[in-house]
Length: 270
Image (cartoon, rainbow, N blue to C red; front, top):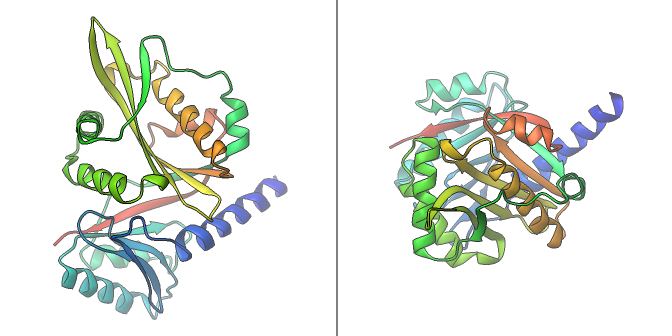
């Protein structure tokens, strides 16, 4: 238990240093800005706008929150403040809510060693009748958006724009995947997922992973996780991270992912 606790603390510190405080722009259109109290990403609507890291206390939090609202309002951009459970002050979530932010459902940040995950999923293939396909064009992105909307019940318009922008601007650090079912002579997109590569950090991120309800429980999502783990291994990445919902967390933990912390996205809409 002591060894696991030490590993947990090491990984959490590594993630804070490399992926939050040392974050790199998601695309050439984005810029990372270091202020005295936060690290943030800013840019046009085609990129994710938000707070990646904060170093606050009770005396600095409210002023820093107000400054971020002014910054993104001047840009005309909605933005997200991603609050990690270990961020301070302890009541930062309450302060964000009081400033007009809307919390979404908490997610669990899971991490796995790439080499271990590849071993655990060795031999894992797509179920019979399922083809894993990489998306590179607008037609494929439209299918990804359709799957996302059906699986999660949310509007995928902005997601589609961001995927197209990332494919065009940063194809070397971004992969988009579809699982296609071949049924009665038809091709049916049944699951979509994304892989983001963060050069120099040792981390790759698994995003999306939405499966149409009728196709859940058949191993499609597991096959896409294994496929993406092999991609990360081939490119020399050491760790995989996933911001997991309650639905995907049990599957990922059975594959060897471990919970590192929880995080809550706080949204500020203009």
